[in-house]
Image 1 (cartoon, helix red, strand yellow):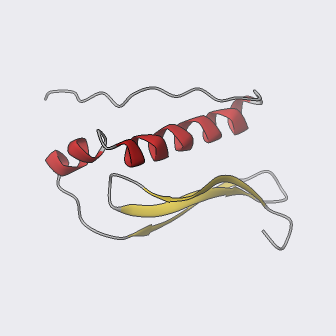
Image 2 (spheres, rainbow, N blue to C red):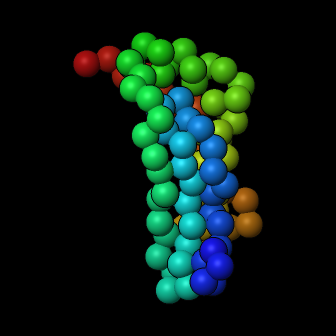
Length: 85
């Protein structure tokens, strides 16, 4: 950031056991900066996505990336969908 980058998505914890965000460098590349915090089994991940804190983090992550990539002022998001295999 100090070298001219811009925050695309602020740092946050997600339902998958990661802490991270996104930045855009002065050349327009978007970098995902993520660290693994904990292992989360799939059932717990889906449970967490129902928690308003994790749901909001997912919404913000989707909308900020969509806005950056599309050039729209406001990005779009969608609810996670669990598929059966």
